[in-house]
Length: 418
Image 1 (cartoon, one colour):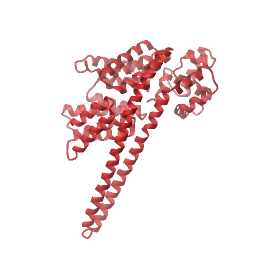
Image 2: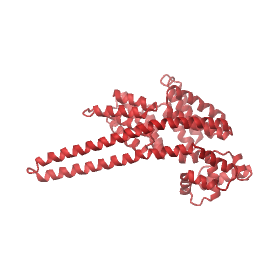
Image 3: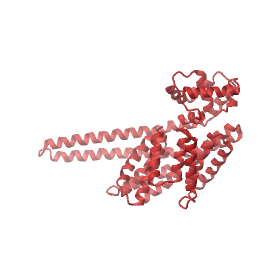
Image 4: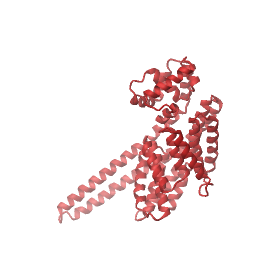
């Protein structure tokens, strides 16, 4: 349990390699234990590692194991209940990462039912800000979150306050209160630095860059964009080490599977003359079991190798290519549309799934909104009156079956950045 707790500190501090090393130690020495709490803790920390590495499938797989162990714990023990709450809470985040927001909010409510905390409540508010856009519901949950932050249990919890402020900043921006939104995100940044949560810090830098972009402050936009790139590069370097360590662990497990299978197979040979039918059944069972495990391990390795591609995609979004595409739009260049489609094909693909009849003009308009262009900037780029831009936005909402108050920028961003 000590190794698992140390791993947790390293993981949230951004050192995934160290976190994996301590988790491997914890797993190695816990083999014969019957402690469901311990096994639940180890599997949950593995889930956190793979979540930080953006391997959501593995994160959910380990989290599912943690849920199963947590459900076996005593219901009358507060530590056991709080662990189940923690497992449900993190599962909601993993659901967001695989584009299942409705499932995410279900697990958030499960966590809150066990014991409410500001972080989970503000994440419900975030759901009503981005996915099911209901500003009144979002305000209600933010009010509850801020009230809880003033209570004795959470008054000094800087991490929870940082998360609440980040979510609140996103909400304020969606309501057109950009100045207040920027202040909320900056307060979140200071708290994230104090508790050493680099992933939270990275997301805040990215949000501020977009906010300043919408304000037309190119200097501040570039300042926070550079901070995001620098921090992302630092996290990627450690993440790559963690990937190698994880692959080595998977290979070691696979070799252990082979050795175990060989020993089991040899043992059955001693009894072959006594009960041939029984031996055959056991051999078939272990063969199928090992083949299934090997297949899962191979799939896991493939997922981990794909991390590099996901990382490259993130860098691309933060690179000079992003600025070049924006410049093409501002200069009314004909190659804006194909360049955007080449860099961000997922956006058009997802929008066309919703409505295959969207025109090139519609998609170009959507692209500029995704890039953070204000209505005034769009009007200048497409030689259109400001009023006509608002009319166009209304028509696009109708074509995408969105409610009239839906923030198109947040909706398009949620497609590529869950």
